[in-house]
Image 1 (cartoon, rainbow, N blue to C red):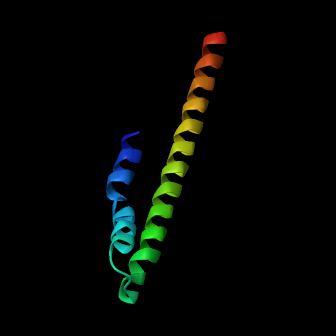
Image 2: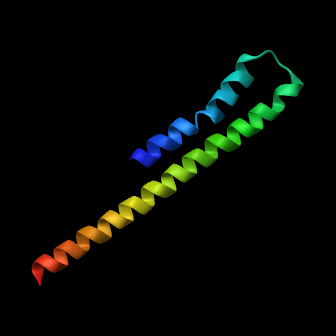
Image 3: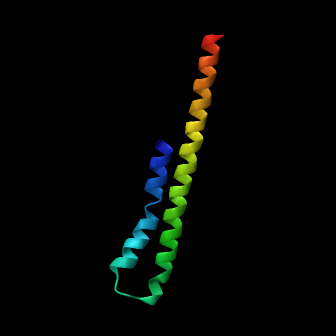
Length: 72
């Protein structure tokens, strides 16, 4: 959970780029903010999901080992 929170704190850059891009007047020089904002935001979400999946799998394996050791 702490790692996910850190990713969201560090990953605030992507949404900030998107907000600035949409809040600013139409300016072709800001187009990079849109694409980098999308990329950073998507990467943050995918990394957080991968870390969550890894932690859930690890917790399930630990729980399974505990149950087997208690039964046997």
